[in-house]
Length: 594
Image (tube, rainbow, N blue to C red; front, side, top):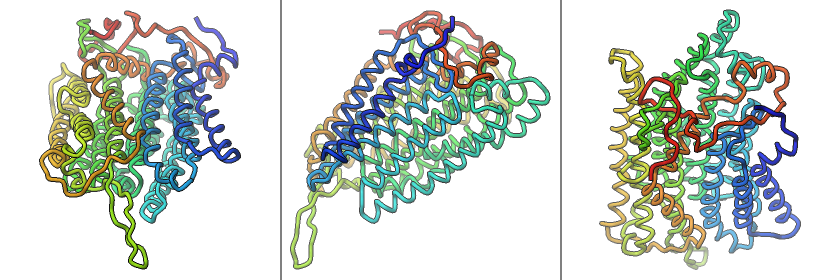
């Protein structure tokens, strides 16, 4: 049953995003006219208010039109708010020095909330214009945060480098969505999807000619935000030049945006199980998965090899971030290769029931962002004192950030809690069992191996491509363990070289402890996150309104918004994706096993 929504209902469904915008405006105005200084604490309050509105959202509402409020957008929204709160704590910790100099942080806190709003809107975008606007609402606050986070020469160089390269990536992405507009004759993703899957010869011929250009340009724009090959080269210099908090931001939120963009791109050519797809749609999917497999393999390999030779902690984490972008692309490549088929393993209710590429990517992305923010929280929390000499042979002790791996030597003796937390984060990033990073990597490997599971391996076959990709992931995980263990060895087995002090402030320490707590919870009970990620991944592969029954209404008015009832999240009939069986059936995973 479908009914039109009123403007009031629409505002209620996007209340969390509106709360973020309202809080940002209040923070910026209060800082400009009332002398308010604690921008990051106010930002945390704004995130809490947005989270409160998010908890009031109905679980069975599917808003379609320019915005798609469904399980996928809901999953992204909660990820954005949760990681945003942790990042706000880290960024508040690095702002202590500026607050001591009586400067305000309201500008940073306000634009950070706008960044979170943009990312949440990207997760819900069902229109090219809204998708591009959301990405720019992410990019512009990022420029401001980079420029204000560090004002020395290296910081400004990092800001300008990211700014100019981001402009180039935005231009490429804009050209890509222009090609998609040419295919569909509309900015609505539902209309473009119908045209791509059409079997009419005239439409197929025209769409097929534009698909390679659109895929290449959109993936290029998305890979910049993910720091994936070939748009990865800026990451080590920018991460080293900016502050630890900003490096944490660049390592996480843009990657979420990149995954969303590619997921939406793939959903354009996928329909309901068993639904016929025209040659343009098949060409779109075939080209996408081949490009993504190549990019994923190169990205993880280049990132890990670069990380092996790094001694600077932030450069090492930048190269590690590149490698993790490759891991994330494995899942979306699997989703592209599976042609939108849904299946289930047999109803055992175990953790593998309902496994698919996008679900695996969302699970891994969730654990990655928490571990990465936690790692940078430790770096922000720690520091050491150094002498700064001024004219007249006058010295002053100043706080320096942790920069090299040797700065962490002996940390287990000086600060055992910080050392344990850092070890937990690094082992999860390395994929050591039983931490969540291991389960995420294992899910990606299994989903990759199950592509065309019943088909024989032959040269150039799809199964051969994905078996090779799975082997590449396993080998890269082994390489990554080497440089992560190098950092852990320095903390536990090397003598103290420089006096490390935990003077990064309460907020950074709180972010460190909260991140560690989340990882421990997911380690003990991964089924809950897995079930949510699987259902969100299944929803992401269906653009609301892309069925033929809704095509005419979308063609007549892209601004019309409707609410339709969808299965409850815990319904035993809710469709999910699995690659353990190649036949579409209903979900038998009703509740995560305890």
